[in-house]
Length: 294
Image 1 (cartoon, one colour):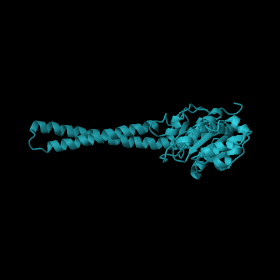
Image 2: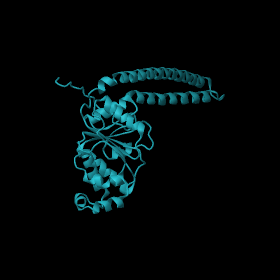
Image 3: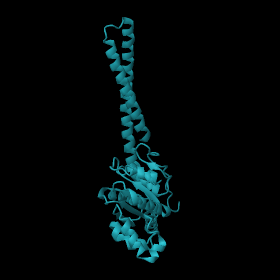
Image 4: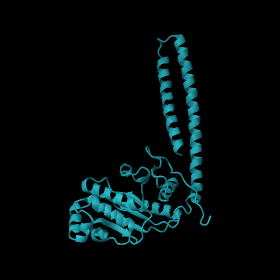
């Protein structure tokens, strides 16, 4: 699908150029001051342009049919390729901003299709943060003040990310959850194998941006971290994921996007996958699943 999209785009550009050439040729040939030999050359060029245009049109139609067939094939193969890809893995889900029911459902569908365990831990975070309030809460507890620097939002975010992915005792989350958490479910004891990150909030600045950068770093130290969104999502989080070196998938509503998510959570080559300009590829390399005992 990836190569076809770019073939179609390049051929469309050629088609436009050909049309312009034809129009220019018609305009020039209509000028009565042009001599007969020159007119014959222009008419020949018009005929050649038309033949090339017709060939491009036929090629575009063929590519469209091929692309549709490829999409149908990927949809048919999806259940077979996804089965057991995440069997037994514990995956968390973090929304930066309000939880979106459709995106949450798409993530859960991908995890279920790949036989991961039910979503172990879900958190929806309030942003922007109140850095002053967080610092005050940390300072009130000597044990926490010894754990992180209250004056550094990125340090607080990093430790929160580590706690969320590690599970077990979560003293910092226990102290700050009233300030940070909009919605949550799942326990906090089990260590996560991977975390799916969804940003529904607008881009953050200042202390909130530093806090989130620390949170992402902390999560990524412990678990495989993958940022996801739907095609055409506004505002997009892809620039943030790329700056933070977080693997991403940008077409979660498509089977190919959910497969890319499962592959990344299973340990595929990190990168940015989907159908957007600048992506590494549509999909990472997909390794075959070895049956248990096989």
